[in-house]
Amino acid sequence: MRLPTGDGDDPGGSLRVTPAGSVVVATDALLASADRLRALEAALHDDLRRVVAADAVVTGLPIPGIAPRLQHLRERCESARDAFTRVAEEYTRGEVFVEGLQRKVAEIVAATAGPALLGMLARLVMFSPQTLLLGGLLGWAAIPDGSGGRLGTVRDFFLQNPQLITSPEFTRFVSLLATSIDDGVLGISGMPGVLAGLPGAELSPAGGVAAGAFTVAAAGSALGMFRETAVATERVSTTRLDAAPVGVRERLDRIPEVNQVRIEKYEAEGMPPRYGVFIGPTETFSPYADTDPWDLTSNVVGVAGLSPGSLRAVEQAMADAGIQPGDEVLVAGFSQGGLVATRVAASGDWNVVAVETHGAPAGHIQLPEGVSGLAIRNTDDFIPALAGPQLDHALVQVEREAFAGDAPLPTTEAAPAHQRTAYERTATAIDAAESRVVREQIDRLDSFAADYLARPGGQATVMTYRSTRLTGD
Image 1 (cartoon, one colour):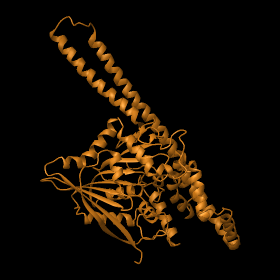
Image 2 (cartoon, rainbow, N blue to C red):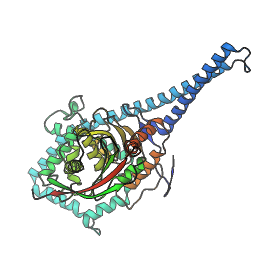
Image 3 (cartoon, rainbow, N blue to C red):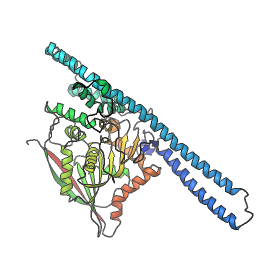
Image 4 (spheres, one colour):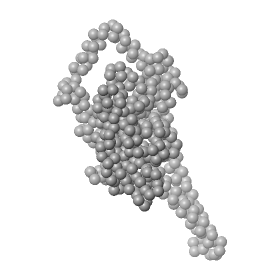
């Protein structure tokens, strides 16, 4: 499905939807067709009831046998709707089986190969540290210098070959890898590889993702990487707001860059305030903590379930904005911002009632009951896959391939399916969705602020925040 946008044809694929509380995946078009059949079935049922009632008081109906015909049409609608449901369920069942099998194989391989690779490395170092050093230097030296040095050459290589990291297949590989790191650790600790795939063998209930990220953070910390610091957050501006965001695209547009947190306060006469918290994406990808808490350190520490600087910065901003524990809050974020938004909702420290995330590595985080919203992902974007598969089903999940079929990939942006422009196109496609399950969720998110501003005395204020790391601590 190609949807027209202001910038030409949308290269993305069709929307795939997983309703809240379900694991069944269906396209938006299939769900919309089922909705139309359900509405037609209800209308035919009403028509049949009226015909039967009329037949009881009037003899000689103008169309003989109309009641059986209406009943037959109603049954055909019901049968077609049920067939759509069966198709979606069979597709999901097959996909879940294949993914589960791949995951178990990956766990066993990680547990078996982990100690073997570690042993080989240890023997190599014991035999000749100079050989290992020489091999590493030769490998690095084999990379030609570019305009930005060898790291620039690596970056340019992926820019020129974006297809290597932009596909649903690569995304699935990353997801399998993310959930297998803990099994490698178990293998190194001495557990037989064949036992790693057994239920209950994981280091973490979240499929090993948090344990794997913790392992990465701990290993990097020994080299000075992924070390958390204190953070300080200050308000940059406070202005009046004229209108509430309407639609997924407008909420995405309110997620900030540079000033990492935007908080909108909605007020109405006689009502407690509501707040919309919009959280920005990663700003720097250095593994060494510097001045910006929206960095790779916060990504790794956040996935590990620890206390990343960006999460603490958002909570500092929320406290400064005057949000009280009982105030209703909507959180929205892109990339790392989506991870932090999910962590805020999962903490239980705030009354988060709605969540909307775009490209967030947060699928392993369990949300409390009563939270609704949308988890939006491009299936050829590997960043969300760093948190493994979606384990929590509190949110409606909407996915699509950002560059479907033979659509050309940009060669000017790293990881093009994760860029904001790609998610802007996906947000526009979601706003045009026709299925009831998606439309109801969009309407619920829209009404969070719009209902307040439509009341007497309705007004809104927007506050922006900037946070820095206190690296001297």
